[in-house]
Amino acid sequence: MYVNSGYLHNSRIPFREKTQALRVLSAGTYQLHTWPRLPTWRPKGRIDWQLIYISAGEGHFILDGQEVTVPAGNMVLYQPKQEQHYYFLGKDHSQYWFVHFTGRLVRNILKQYEIPLDGYILHTGISFDYEILFRRMRDELVECRTGYEEMLVYLLRALLITVSRKMHDHVLNISGFVQEEMDKAKIYFRDHYNEKISIEQYAASRNMSTSWFGKSFTGTFGVSPKKFILDQRIRNAQMLLETTDGTVSEIARIVGYDNPLYFSRVFRKEKGLSPANYRKIFHERFQ
Image (cartoon, rainbow, N blue to C red; front, side, top):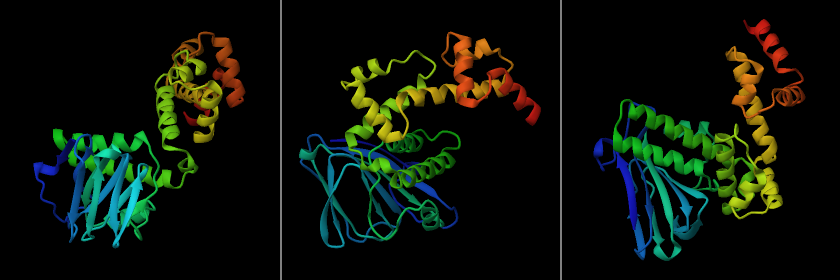
């Protein structure tokens, strides 16, 4: 078994926050490799809130007296004083992340982000975004850097917003494997948009056909890989035209175009103006 977690002030004793709106008490992850069974039973629950995200395998939860198998791609939300009775099995190769939190406005904040409070299971889908936020909360609790408690609240709010968005998003109909692969592709394209990216080579590197990858990416995000990369380039070109005095040729190279004339044609097609005219009109309007 693998465990990696962090606790506020290095204390495992939960408490109820009565003054601050929101406060994170602990966060971390468990992975089952060799242990046959990892059970948890708190008949009287806890005095704080707990959110569990199952990122691999499945968990077995006894909810209102009935056992429910909850697969990866779902979260379970426990409110204060709700009985917590669940277990994970090594044969399922399960991994889950958790966060405990408290605060006088927790219920209002969850309602604000449209997190349902009339049940336990949240159908959130699988996403690297979740793991990144859980991991960052855990690291903040371990490292205790300047302002870490405030950062923890920011990260938890970001997690709740992400959950809310994905619960209302059509991509939840996509399988966990496809969602994970498309998330990886989106991150790669966003980080490397200004480089020469071959959709064919990227798909091949992930053992996918170009056609299947393109259809899956478009079905997940509503835009083709080519258009996604183009949008990153044009958006960043706009920012540079608005905030710097770099030449059109310099900006073209920065966002990934060796030929400034081709860049100008693409920009005009997308924005209806040449880069030079876009900059001129922007400055006349806002400066």
